[in-house]
Length: 397
Image (cartoon, rainbow, N blue to C red; front, side, top):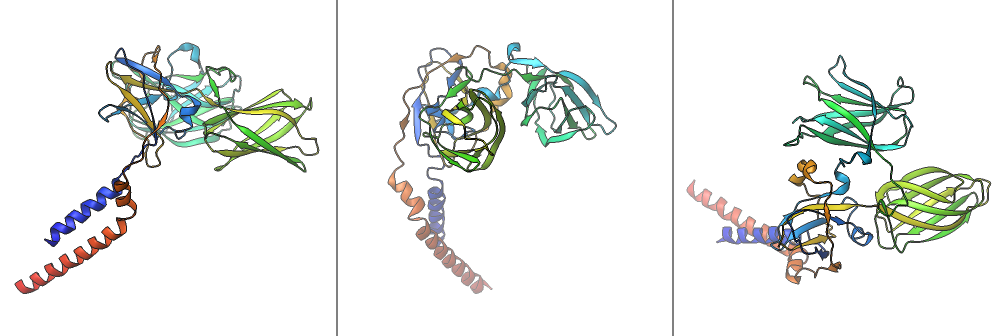
């Protein structure tokens, strides 16, 4: 009897601890799917305001509650040649230590934060390091211990690998792939993504409703930004009316600390590109030194246009669920089939975003109010069970 009580209480605790393990707070319905295939959903500022910056708390669900795998458009290497420019490969060899050494030239010394490698199919894992150089002789570390995961594309003999790193403008980039005692990878080509028009509606979405206050002190201007809807932000545009000539240091500070430091010069619009964040408030510090403060006419924030791409079946209904403190980033098989997604993916719309009714009070009560009493009862039952077992063993002996 005691054992049964113990088992029942243990089940209650486990059930209570898992109630609402991934409780989503908002949802929106996907428009009717008329033809089976891949579809893309545009991420609006209103949608991004309800998700984390990595979209780990966003799910696509069918009517049976089954998750539908999806990819972000930024995770898919575009195959349109207009999107990419080949980089000249200075060296592609294997050194005496068995390491693959790839050196590419950034002729215009453009500021880059990603490179793309086309690699022959290889179901192996590798680690690489990235360095930069101005003269091709003296190298400076950029990133270390980056992982190339085991990948290949069925039906194609090569795949594109994206390498992301801190923004750098070196003349040369060197990638060293550590092969150990294994054969090297066959690297076919290297690319950089072509820049986009920062003010184009197809590349950057301007976030609504942001406001700011300013405070000028000796040699410094502080701009306190209110990101009203916790929208995703990775672009800041500052319209400056004067003075005609200026050159100032500028810092962007979020709750994580300093996320960007820039040297800005005379222009009507300052354009800043930053790592993606969604703080409700952040600050900009402008170092005026002995100069008068900048005459700022306005500040706006934007985010890179993002898409959600999924394979949807005709006749089925789907919805997006978002905003969860407990959700973790999903790992879908679809990531291994990027190159099968067509270039002309059809767009599909969403209904109005609504709140999901909260979970039943009984579930919440078990998780919070009753957890400690139930735990105490389990310990008491466990003690009685142990005492009874000890006494029976003593009688037998």
